[in-house]
Image (tube, rainbow, N blue to C red):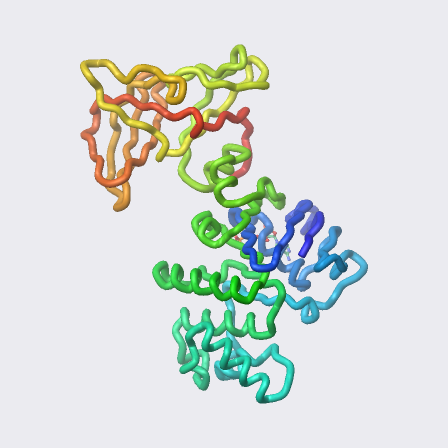
Length: 357
Ligand SMILES: Nc1ncnc2c1ncn2[C@@H]1O[C@H](COP(=O)(O)OP(=O)(O)OP(=O)(O)O)[C@@H](O)[C@H]1O
Ligand SMILES: [Mg+2]
């Protein structure tokens, strides 16, 4: 499926502002972004239940929808799974899964049994939705959506109603089934972790636009701006003014190639990339090309988070606060003097811009 330049405005505001995407068979593309950025609207346009102001959608090279021509939703071979996946309460599990199927009774029954087997719900075939738990209902909803063999599955925060442990299991099972069926998936979520876990490709969306697209590793490690770093994890940042293509900071100089002198830049890095050294009689580690200069800092507080410890520092030099995370237990006393470094390849330098996050 190729989505080209979708635009949709409500009351003069472009809620979807030129979105282009492609969805491949057997691949999961995640539309990831903060609440209100236009994800569900994009999905509804693709499903055919919302109209775009402009833009086109093609499947296998043929047009299914532009501003004049529309294949109706039920003929798009698209499966839908939304957060409120509402099963039909008056239909049994069998009736629900058979709902979108064509063919004679035996053929339908065979496909229903096959799908229930897939989601390991065969013994529930004669039950009604109110007799099932949330997780069980979700699996039936998945079976129902996949039974007619859609070529593309649109999923809008489909796992958000489940508790954490159940969610991980159902998420992984769902993914396995979708891959087996070779279905192309567009999954909407506002949770980076869910996107990293599920996606082959992440399209990061903000204010109606896709700001970055690529494999999860690339989107995470090569963010396009500060907001993109901060969307995936906590981020440290401090400002510095560029002079002679260098931004000088308490951590030593940072290269800022192509940035004009006098420009204010943000140096941004994640807490897990702060390297901590003990103070040795007032001396820190020697500067290196990779790790720059160590900056002297004092512990403000340290907290144990389970997998890691979160230690907050104040830099002696600028007074800036720096958050760091350390695997396991590391709980230095407040006011302990330590030396902090950040690897240059883990830092991002962006000209400062105030963007809505
Ligand atoms: N039919 C409508 N009329 C007016 N405004 C709308 C309509 N549908 C959506 N909007 C507005 O468009 C914006 C984007 O909505 P959308 O549901 O696409 O966001 P989202 O990215 O899915 O957010 P969330 O993560 O909270 O579900 C919101 O500000 C919403 O209020
Ligand atoms: Mg939404």
